[in-house]
Length: 77
Image (cartoon, rainbow, N blue to C red; front, side, top):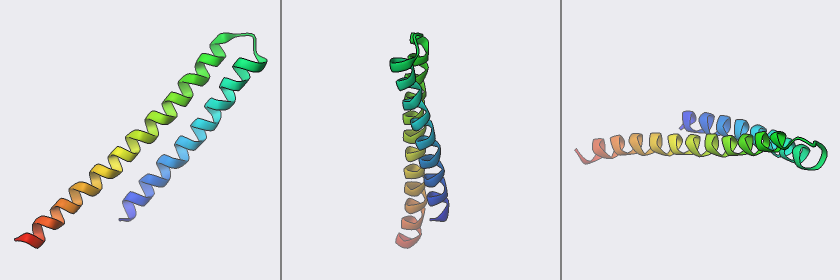
């Protein structure tokens, strides 16, 4: 159970930091900077943050399902 929580917290922490940086970069690119490439980089960072968060959630869920199925097999035998 402890490994789920550690991985979940790490995923949330990294995702939140990247999301904040991505939104700040996007806003800088759209409001302040004259270069549209900065806005594209901001969009890419936000997409990366969402991807990292979703992959982390999938890994935590699959690890929990595998361990629960092993415990279920022990109880049924």
